[in-house]
Image (cartoon, rainbow, N blue to C red; front, side, top):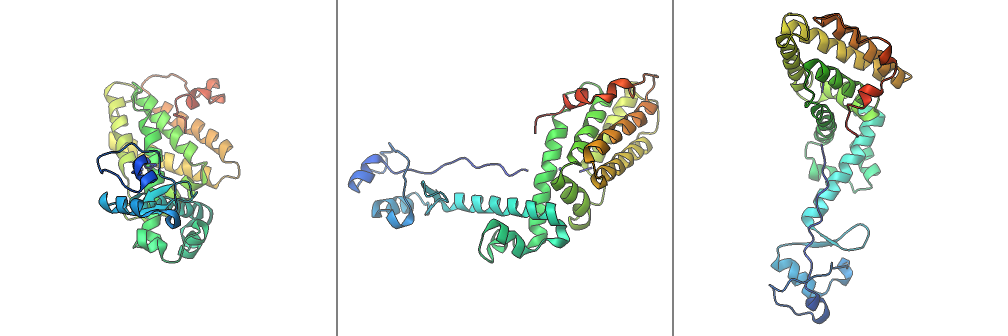
Length: 279
């Protein structure tokens, strides 16, 4: 199983002192600013000087409501390219997506993508994959507080299968990434975590005393295959529910006690959903 996030950068615009705006003169240590609102055409010489003194190149932001440093503009442009690429890869797949298509959707000039991603389509795909994979890991890891290793196994499976109903995770992380991103065809941290939970469950007596490697591999393969069924289904939500039932029966067969957790209460998945963080 598969690991974003692009995190919004805080607005750290450096504003000119109010006196500087009014008189075009200021003392450098006197910083009592309202936000500076201007575009390049209207920036006065003092504003330009302030940018030089503070080592900040000033450019207008997209809504014309203020100014951004070059660093802020670069982060914003990169995030816009990432979002445009995410949409293209989710809709068209890796092979069906072109650099020109990403730039058109982002409404950026030719060559902008290579400025931020010199490796072109492959590099921006890897960046988008990392972002999506991180979403899975954040949701999965939010459940690690559960005391029972079997409960953590089950909750992690539900997180994975829920994400399989979403186009970007299904197409980018599970379908294309194994063929495009180096190393994604091999078992990664999710398998290792699953194996550790199986070993822990054996240790505390929640499941039978079985070989942890063999058991983890069997369960991991079943979960991945179930995810592929969900992705290929016409009704992904119905397929997800069926997959959860099947995998719960699988886990129940490993239990050291004969508790039937695959019974009637699984008809309503609200207990499962309640364990999941809000996305």
